[in-house]
Length: 110
Length: 231
Image (cartoon, rainbow over all chains, first blue to last red; front, side):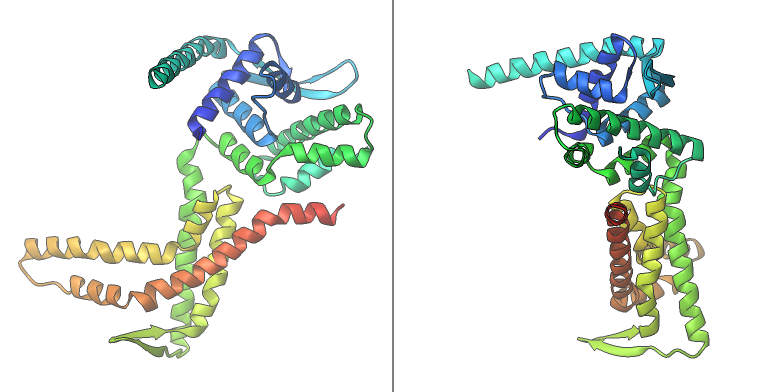
């Protein structure tokens, strides 16, 4: 069973990673993450928006209302310079965790 | 086309935020649902089916409400705890105690029940009022975005606080006796009260819990009732 802290950590990494490519609104973000992870990571409203609000409070992302060419208003999120700085160590931590787990599972299968 | 803003507003009726902040959250979630629905409609389904599928993807509204409140108020965890636990809990304690004192002033006599060798005093009208006080504590805590545990804790706060106070009397009386060298009555009182815990703690606690649980159940299902009622 994956604990809430790990889930929260992966969700943060996923959101920050997709925002690295450019600003997105909530729906686009959820769709892109789902597509890029081939459906392994899916966000509900309750998992996406509270996370965005937390990241915004920390100053890692910034949301602003924008009007598209079709006249629709959407709140788009951008990665801030602080968010960009944080993304790199988070990626390293997760890469380290995956390597450790890989080593562990190899040992247990041996 | 469905009014997603109105639907989200109904579902997040208990989202207590600053008006501007609340409007933004509702508009943002409504826009998300609108996008999902549009994509589903492109698959050639009826509007009714598209709405149904959109709502099934939305997830748990109570969860969204609670987590959004927690995220928006994250910078003030102490303030959050105060409104979710301490204020509703203390209000439940004060109001229920005040009501008991009022009843006693008007000559309410307890009914005496015997359980084994113990005598239990039961103030029946007061006990019957306790579910309402428990429900009040649960309601205030829930409005402040309290989790299920916090809501229940706020509703049964009075017996918990009394138990804590009684238990504190032991070390305090020991310390007082050590300092003054005189025998104090605190521990005697505390022992008596704890021995009579069934009448003073367990039964009132159960009555408060009933009220708190019912209020929580009602509040957690209210959003979906509202939605169904509004079609």
